[in-house]
Every structure is written in C-alpha cells, then in structure tokens.
Image (cartoon, rainbow, N blue to C red):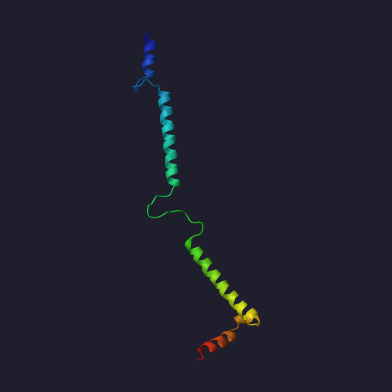
Length: 111
C-alpha cells in the first residue's frame, strides 16, 4: 500500500490541480506553438500607421517615373512624325533631320 501512495504522490508532485507531468508538458508545448504562430503573424503584417495606408508597391515610384517619361517621349516623337508626315504631307522621317527643325525655328523667330 505504501508503494501505491508513493507512486500517486510522484505523479502529482508540484501540480496543485493534480495534473500529470505529461499533460503539463503537452500544455506548455501547445502554448509555445501558439506563441510562435502569433509571432510569425506579427512579422508578416506591416506596422500599422494611422496616417498612412502602407502597402508594398508592385512597381516602385522610380519605375513609374521612368515609364511616364518614356511614354511622353514616344508620344512626342510619334506626334511630330504624324503631324509632319500625314497632316503636312511630307516624309515622316524628315522630322529627325536637323535642317527641318532649323526651318521651323526660323518661322518662330521671325516677327
């Protein structure tokens, strides 16, 4: 009878509620897993700032500016070729001739 009481006492030693050591270990392991999940969720979410709605951009601002400037340059060259070739009934490739631009600037400088 003494051995039975000793075994019972060793299982519940240190636990006020009478839980076994295995169940306490399982509970601690589950608590650690839950804490790790919360930490990983915190790392994946951006820091909240009430003044800015932060999100990672697909295209950075510098790429947008380069794209905008490129599109403007293409539109300028295309418009000049269209205007000189179709509306002016000339050769559209003459837009790239410096003599053509000198002739246009002479018209603008003349008062």
